[in-house]
Image 1 (cartoon, one colour):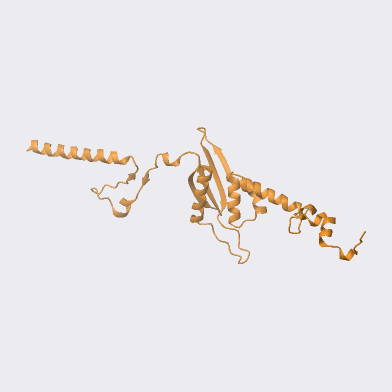
Image 2 (cartoon, helix red, strand yellow):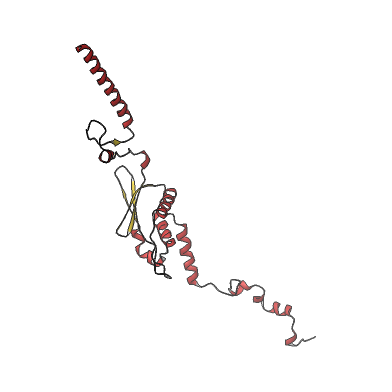
Length: 212
């Protein structure tokens, strides 16, 4: 029997004697020589669940993160992002409240406001993702208050719009001051008014002829 010196053992023999050298995953490593910590695994699981959520509240959470707000701060106020009520006819109304400013820039110390363009983009995304309709917004006390409804806003009767042309340019009709109300149904009214004026004028003409 031939006995080889310990220092002259071949690499192949060493590999056979130590199976851990053949497959690094057996040692619990990830292939890069590092073992993932439990904390990293938990954080990854939380992040994965958050990204897969489809609620409006989680969408607002993610959007505010894009505006620079840290997640740990947002978690404290998450329950206040969205409020909801349901009317007797089953219409759902949702109110979204967000800051009107981005998170302060730590490098410069400046704070940029969230402008109409960014708000409009967010509103479009909410309508597409959640099937609700934009129903107005206002900026007040350092926040944007955005209203949504499940009802189709486009099918609602248009509210009357009153202009002030008479106040600016004066009244063109015999000095009688009249404010104009414009809505979709006024076209028929205007046509009927024109017919009435024609009939009135014809009556005057016929009366004058009979009187002469």
